[in-house]
Image (cartoon, rainbow over all chains, first blue to last red; front, side):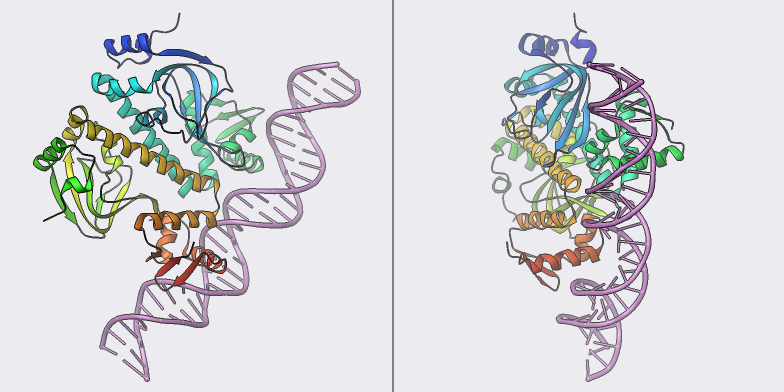
Length: 208
Length: 208
DNA sequence: AAGGCACAGTAACATTTATCACATTGGGTT
DNA sequence: AACCCAATGTGATAAATGTTACTGTGCCTT
């Protein structure tokens, strides 16, 4: 069996948990799956119970500008925001670690706002924290140069995976910051010289 | 007297309008006033009934990175989002045209979500449209070079003021795009040569 | 072992953007 | 008119970032 929903979403009331269990559908997806595309209509609100999803903004040239990760206990703010009017998505969502998600039909998402206080608070808090996160991203691109943005990027990834060894290629970082691999390689080398990281093949060890 | 609230917020139910009129406080502020600062605690939700407010992100060096405008019939999404927990603001709000605002205490903002469907819909739509707008801003800085960003900036201002003659200095644009005046002057000149704008002192005429 | 391949390092050069230094312009003030 | 001053124009140069082209390196496959 799966981990009970109550453990993953401890703030949900028991009634809400029951409502979810009897109305929502579960779905598993493998790493690499694209769960949502720009321009696609949104039909469900998505809660994550396992794995990791990358939310990014797609560039015309194939850039995958990194916004944030969704992890267990979290929900896709975009899918909630678009709920009421069944709007189009403005972002891409790609599975980066095999996930299990709970899909909630938009009509219920809306209805529960009135019926379950714990759902209302969860939704509002999801909005708030993601808006804040996106504002920080704006900051980083608006005011910082690439070396600082790289440090910010690494820090966020460290926080998200709760480890100090990131398994990403330079190319991947470059794509997510919309720059080129060479630039990232150069900057990482400089960071290594400053003693901030240790570089290994397919792995970046964060020292500070 | 003022324009009735019902005209400015036509979707609000009559009960909601009454509730606002008997609970909220009005406030007028002159151009130049800073209504909200980064780090400041938010005590009210703000509805705009007259004038224009600029929402921006402040840089360490005094940059005023432009996010969007608030205009009559709109509300500050940040002040709503932070409502439930009385969080700190992450943005700056400056009056650019003398405004009248309606201030709604956070407790009511929250309470009305359950009581007034039209309030609920207004709040959700405010979130949605601002989130979308911020995502477009991210796009513009993440994927575009300065000339395209300038065009995007001018377009947004044209849409906001519903006119084709913008009364802004090059310096002001530079501050809001976090670049330098010289760069903006040069790019505007190029745009003039391409026939996109006509440059006058303290005024930019948008031709296309 | 040999070859293929993704990943990484690096030099050289191009382009974009930022900065500095100074000239010009036009409106308002005295 | 003479002056002041903010706004704008422009060249020269510096710095950051992007691009091209190639080398090296470790791992996997055959």
